[in-house]
Length: 90
Image (cartoon, rainbow, N blue to C red; front, side, top):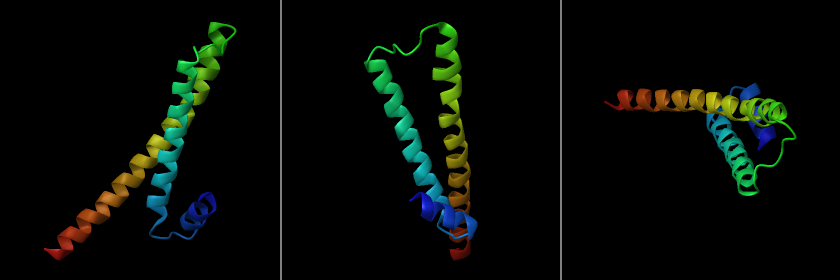
């Protein structure tokens, strides 16, 4: 799906937004599984508090923030087209 997504973005295909949205949902699901698994196992990853906050919270937050931003942009683009199509019918 990554290759198809890259191709769709590079060639500005109409289905690129739904592909980006689905990849972002998959990424967010993976992050959710990672954090839930860590919490269920006791969250014993850090040797000290700095490492915990620097790696486990800050470094991994990019895997949450960036897909949310991309998914939000794709959602707005998809809904804008839906509204435009609806207004053309009326």
